[in-house]
Image (cartoon, rainbow, N blue to C red; front, side, top):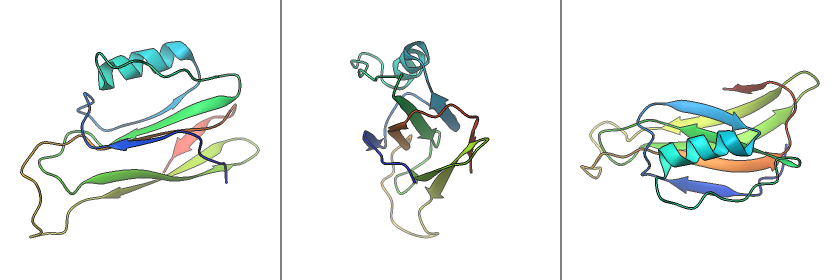
Length: 117
């Protein structure tokens, strides 16, 4: 398992559709960041040493939804990123507000194809 260096997990952003991303360039990060967080400064990432992994759950009708990147397993020909999605239990009280849960982390540079599961 790789060590997580940056860990950003919030429930509101500009990404309205479900998406998983492995980002290895500043240009890719800038495109994603401007969509997700308009007007918020783009973080400095050393892409020679790090990869950004992002999981966006898309727009949900209430609170209680969550997405978490739980691990990265590096294999010879790929990196497997484990993602856990949660939703509120049926009948549970949840905030009646639209949310867009996401989780963004940085990990050691990944140079192989990335599979999210």
